[in-house]
Image 1 (tube, rainbow, N blue to C red):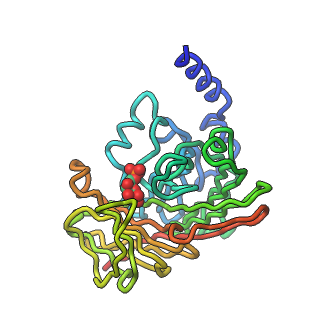
Image 2 (image 1 turned 180 degrees about the vertical axis):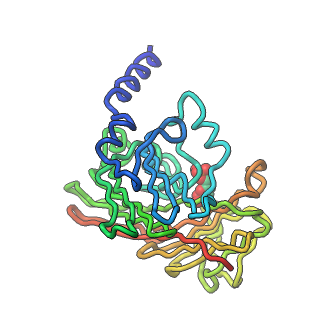
Amino acid sequence: MAAAICTLQSFQAALRAPSSGALNKEFGIPGHVVVFAGLGGLPTVRLTHACGASAEVCLFGGCITSFKQASGDEVLYMRPDALKVLQSDSPKSKPISGGIPHCFPQFGPSDKMQQHGFARNVDWEIASTSADPQPDDRDPEVTLILTDSEYSRKMWPYKFKVAYSVALHGELLRVDMRVMNTDDKPFDFTCALHTYVEVLDIEKAKVRGLKGLQYLDKTVDPKNPAKKTEDREEITFTGPTDSVYLKAKDFAELDVGTGAAVTFTSNNFSDIVVWSPWTAMPDCYRSFCCMENAQFSSPVSLKPGEFWRAQAEWAVRDL
Ligand code: TA6
């Protein structure tokens, strides 16, 4: 009986949710922004820059599922287990583990809610789309909104709004995230942009820009991570890696082993996380590295009416 009720509820929710076609009529900008049925048939926004670069953002989880250079080369990585779920009959039964999923309002596990919070498990809405008025070099952009719901308040009893703008500036991918407290009581949160980058081989990947920083090594005991200091100019991978670099600078890069590096430029994120599951994910660990702009070591406290804002940018640099 419970299953029947659940099916009816999801059927009603599906009826309420606007279709990709309807969303495209409302928000599409010919040649720059299109809403289409993406992976798993889920409504997805594709931004296309005049130079040929493109990005796709799935409304489920507000997850950036693709970022391609003008050459057509994909920068991000989608885990095979995520693709399997997306190809199943219930594509929303698990968060999308690939591309750039959100961790919000919590990075990591806790007793209160699932690992990495609920923002990656729910549908975000399109608030607006635009393409910069420069006719020869438009920057296509979409702004998504996530607000509290009965579902979110069960885990995290606060009213909030997250606005997340995703834009292409030539071949550069830019996001701007704002978290607003719309409640009448204060709350704290942590967050991360859990970026999966495709690498030629994890053993050829190198991370630069974190030397001298203190980091939490979560590989042995994630609940009681060891605090260490990074003394390597270039971090290479020879085993499982799960490190939260504290007070990271606004720039770091991941050499993907092909003669190019993905650059991470950010503003107002306190930390950078570097994660490779190594052989715990035997069929895919060689193909990706996660490097994540995060706000973890100093949780953000917002009083009613206050907001927090941070930006991140990714680009590909030839070495
Ligand atoms: O960001 C690294 C991390 O927190 C790891 O500790 C690891 O558990 C990972 O995220 C996995 O995330 P998932 O998407 O599988 O829940």
